[in-house]
Amino acid sequence: MTNSVVGLYCSHCSLIQQRDSKISRTLRDVKKTNSEIGGLQMEQLAFFPEIDDKEYKLIQKAVVKVLRDYKTLAVCMENQPECERESIQLFPELRDTRKLNDYKYLQIKRALDHSLDLEQREIIERKYLKGG
Image (cartoon, rainbow, N blue to C red; front, side, top):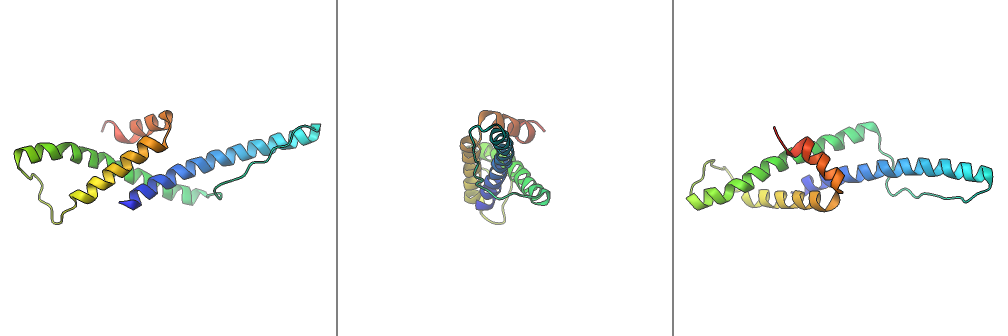
């Protein structure tokens, strides 16, 4: 449960870090230009350490796996009321994972709903959550 959310959170943090890194480089350039002309100087604080390409790829793979799991869990959550209403169990389980899956689904949904802006959410939905 928490690994999925942590993976998603790490991905979001890495995107923020990359944006922060770009902003830092831009502000350094502005600072250099301003110091050359005697203007206002700014300094940007970095909240996260730089990540290399290898770490980025690992984070990206983990987030993709969580998003694919979420898509499956969403279908499962939609099917549950029908099965309960008809008192059937289509797919027998070796262990009871329903509660764990419910928590995973709710936490990933909450992370998607509250940690992304509209544009980021649309991109993720189009790429990972909609269609086949």
